[in-house]
Image (cartoon, rainbow, N blue to C red; front, side, top):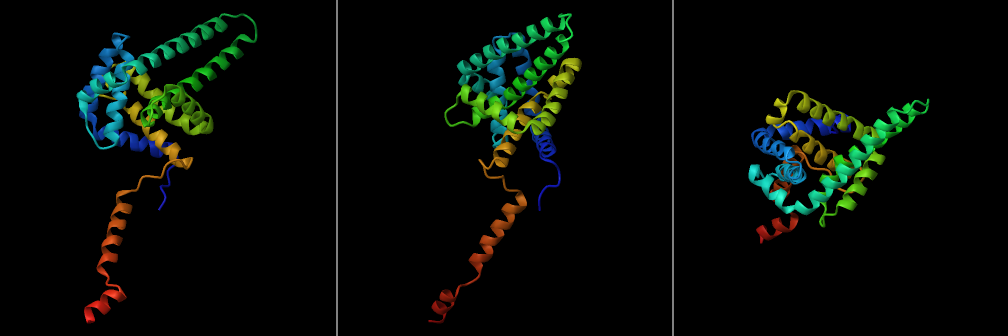
Length: 239
């Protein structure tokens, strides 16, 4: 029986469950991640470490704080490159938005709208970039970003809905701070991996995960087929 909920809401629900199941580990990991952001230079490695923990948690292995440092060390060079790219891109977007906001001409606000659209497209691409990067056999930021862009363009509404939840998490974390020490920003990483997996299944690149009920039915079928004697077995018994 198919799940009646639209794909974005299934992804959001699954991500919340994943985050809640690993809440204690995530709270400790995100607290250290937040402190790393204050240093700026250690922010990108800590972010890759956070995603490393999340990726392994989804695959059944709880690494905790050790995984954060493990991932930060493993992806140190790539994460710093990723951080530099993001710093340059976001600074460029901010400067353009501010500049055209000061233009007195009637077309100024329209250009600002275009800048906002570009910003959304860029942030959506980055939403998929690290999950793609960690799913690759040979990690490549260039390929991960390209795939993130194509996924966003192929599923704009799906991405927009999931990104709204991610944006709410960011706003709550900035305004209240407390959600950071409750591990809430970790939900964004879960959303990224679950959204990517859903898109790969939708595009026919990956087989869908089997539900516990489907696995149970398969196991029952194997046991049942092994228990029923074939005609050849009956003849052998008669001999």
